[in-house]
Image (cartoon, rainbow, N blue to C red; front, side, top):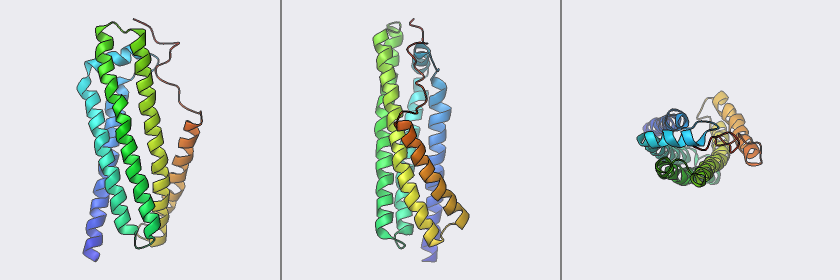
Length: 206
C-alpha cells in the first residue's frame, strides 16, 4: 500500500507539472504574443505569419486537458477512501473542465483560417468581425472551463484537508484559492470582463 501511494503521488506530481507547464507555454508564451490589443488586422497578420505558433498553442492546450484528466483520476484514486461520492464528483468536474477546454480551441483554430483569408483579401471588415467572434468564443469557453476547475478543486482540497495527505497549510490554501477562482470567474461571466482586444472603435481597417 505504501509503495502504491508513493507511485500515485509521483504520477500526481507529474500530471500537475504537465498541465501547469503546458498551460503556461500555450497561453502566455505562444498565444498571447500574437494578439495586438485594439488592432485586429495586425493580430490576424501575426497569426497568418506565425501559423505554427498558433498551432503549438492549441496542441499545448490539448496537453493541458490531458493533464487535467490525469489529475482528476489520480486524485479520485487517492481520496476515494475519504469520501467516494465527493471524490467522484470532483473527478467528473475535472473531466468536464478538460472537455470544455478542448472544445474552446475549435474557434482558436478557426482564427488561423480566417487570418489566411483576411490577409489575402486585405482585411475585409466581415472577416474582422468573424475573427472577433471567434476570439470571444474561445475566451468564453476558457472562462467556462475555469468554473468547473474552481468547483472540482474545492472538493478535492476539502478531501485533502480531511485526509491529511497534504500539509495542512496547502490544503487550507487550496480551499481558499479554489472558491476565489470560482467567484472571480462568475464575476467575469456576469459582465465584469476584460475588454476585447479587438475593439471596433480602435482598430484600423486596412
